[in-house]
Each structure stands twice: as structure tokens, then as C-alpha cells.
Amino acid sequence: MRAIDLPYTRGDWDALLHQVRWRYHKWDIYVAGRHTLPPEAIVLSPSEHAEVVAIAERLSRVIDVAARRVAAAPHLLAQLDIPPVLYPLLRRAAEVPLQLARYDLHPTPDGWMVPEFNEDVPGGFNEAVGIADQLRVPGYTLPNLLRRAVTDAFAPYRRVAMLFATGYSEDLQHCHIIEDWLTQAGHSAVRGSPAHLTRGWRHFTVHGGRVDAAFRYYPGEWLPRLPNLDLWLERGDRLPMLNPISALIRQSKRLYALWPELLEADDLAFIRRHTPHTRAFAPEEHLPELRDHPDRWVLKQSFGRMGDSVYIGAIMKPEDWAKLLSEAANKPQGWLVQRRFVHEPTAFSGGPRYAAVGPYVVNGRFAGYYSRAAPQPLLTHEALHVATLIEAP
Image (cartoon, rainbow, N blue to C red; front, side):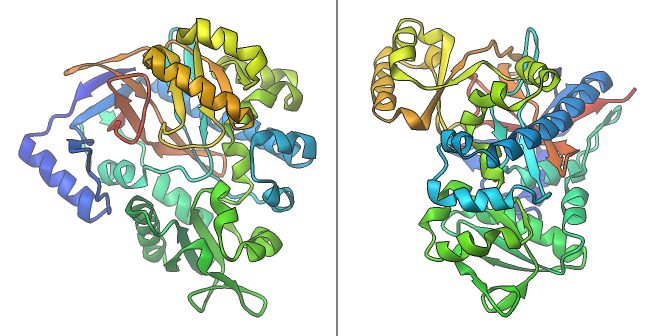
């Protein structure tokens, strides 16, 4: 994997981003006063691209096996830090086939490593497709399959609800672009909160109109906050949904600690090759090692997105790390410890950055890239989005 500057003038790149902002609804191009869409790209060779696709698609299959087994075993489900009120719904929804995921693959000296999964409400659609639709670089291809994959997934359904956390414009922009794709494909759509879902005569409704399916951009662990929770618990598994509520099992980072109980030998070997050693946080067992060797460990909460609950001991101030350990020890069931791996930096023209290649998977098949880079080995909402190009064979 390498990085290149894109052959665009400042004016041409600004014109491209104008389209991304207004045609593709990427309103937050600037984060914390900084531009997050530079004219740069990650480049993969054809063999690297093939390897990434194979890893992502196999991850989807292996996680599916693991999630089904967890759903069928209450003692395992209880270890994922999922609100218990959702257990019955998760067990019933486990067989729903719809899936939209993104796996962030980090380059290491020993190959690609995937420290967590984006299975519940993965994002990045606006910039990923907005740039891919417009970018043309001689000698390279840019996989751009996400729009088709999503519209194919909703092909059987005429009217689709866009259900999102309505207090967040970032969530709205993700639903807005999916809505555009669906309406262009001949569907109709209605936007609303999961709280707006109601039950009509033999069908679901949002704002009084019938809906046949839903696109959910609302974190599954937030469902207990809804005023219509009873409806979700009773019938939430009966509404075809991308992603289904069962994605919450796949999203929990504590799933990583259960691999030996869930997988057969071949799948377990694959998972151990591409995911770091992980254990549910046990203060008596782990605190001495975490205090003495913070450079070796990462502490995470069970749920969280865009790096907002990931703490890397090697890049934290000692006093902040000590405070974090005390906080985690007071509520250990919501935390896990993960062995830190060596994230190799990639040479960009402005200096080294830590990049992750982000393949999308829709219903088990590769569907394009959303890749990011940052000046430190922790990718947050402030990370840069960089296009992913494939060298022509």
C-alpha cells in the first residue's frame, strides 16, 4: 500500500468538493476547522486489493457464524454489554439476512489487522461515493459499488423508512444520500426517528404512511431510550431492515473475547491472524499489566464509533491513563483490553500518516471503499478521508 497526490489543481479539486457537499450531502467537509477531504489517495496493487476483498468477505461470513451462535446462547449474549431488555428481540432477529458493514484494515509488519468492526451503523457513504463518482485518474481504477449494492438489497420493497437520530446532521446526511439512491431506483422513502415507527393494520407506518422496510442509522444500543420501545421489542424483527437489530451482536467489541467459544479451528485461525488478542476487562487480572506496560495495551468500551471510546496507552499521558484505568475498574463489564499491534505508517507527501483501508460489505459481498488516515494511530471523526485507487494490471 502506498499514497499519492491526485493530479488536480486547487480549483478543480474545490469544484469536485462543491459537488460532494451539495449533490452528495457531505455538509461537514470541515471538522474542527480543518479540511478532511484532501486531494490524496491510497493505492493498492491488484493483489493487495484482492487480498483485502477476500479478508472482508470472509470476515462477514465468520462474524455471521459467531453472531448466530451468540444469539442462541443466553450466557454468551450476556457477555456483550448489550442492554438486557433487547435480548428477546436479538434472538428473534438473528436470521434476518440484510447487512451493511465496513471493516477497517490496518497495515502491520505481519499483514492486515482489524481491531474492531463497523456493523451496526457504518458511515462514510457521502464522501466515498461522492468522490468515486467524479474521480478520474489515468492508470487506476476506483471501485464504486456501494450504490448498486444498497439499492439491490432494497429491491423487493416499495416504500422505505429512513430511521435516524434526528438530532445529528451527520446522521441525516447519511440517510439523505441513501434516500436519493432509492428514489432514483424507483422506490419512495420517508425520513423519521425510530420513535416515529408505528404499527398499522398488518403493516408498519412512519408519519402515517405505510413502509415496507427501513434503513436504520440509529445505534442499536440506544433503542431502550425510545418512547415506543414496546413496539420495537414486540415486532421490531418483522420489519425488513438494513441493518437489522441483530447487528448489535456483531458490533459489540466484546465479541472479540469470545472467539474460542464460537468458532471452529479454521475460522479461529483466520480470526487470530487478522484481529488482535482481546479479553473482557477483569481489573484483578489486568490492572497490574496495564499500569506497568501501557505501551502494550489498548482499552476500549464495548460500544462506540469513530474512535470515541478507544484509548491507546502508548499515546496517552500517564496521568490520563491512570485516571482511565480507575474509571474502567469501577464498571469493568463495559470494557475490554486489547493487545496493541504495530500500525505501520504510510508515506504521504506531507509526511507519514496512519492509514486504514475500509472495504464495505453488503450482504456478504465487497461494495467499495471508505479509507481514512490520521497523524496518530487512532482514527477518529477528525481523520482524513482518502480515496482508494487500484493500480491497473
